[in-house]
View 1 (cartoon, one colour):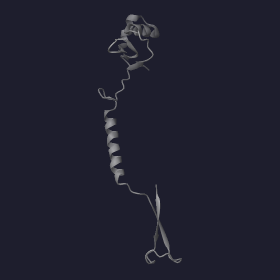
View 2: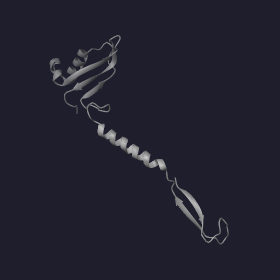
View 3: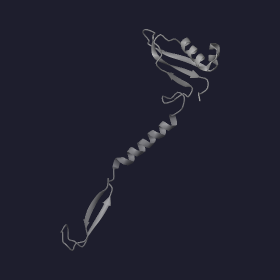
View 4: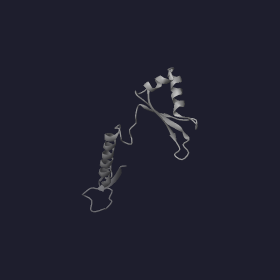
Length: 127
């Protein structure tokens, strides 16, 4: 935000306010000492994020071949998902392996029951 500063002309003695004393108005913006360091820090962080984005092995990597499956039954197994994709693609069950690289159903580590979601990884990205 800007601020205005009223300055008395040099011809006025000190801060005397006389009707014939000319005034000058100076408009400027406040300078922040931390602004440069904050912006340079943000730029550095953004550049680092851009360098690591999309690389395998990084936390932010998004595989275009992997699809999230939600709302699976708790008693679902991988063969159920294979048959689902066989019906969806209208192909025999044996041919699903030509398109699907892997199926992973997320399970509870104690009970071994499905948590209701999983992932399917295809050989090629789906259009």
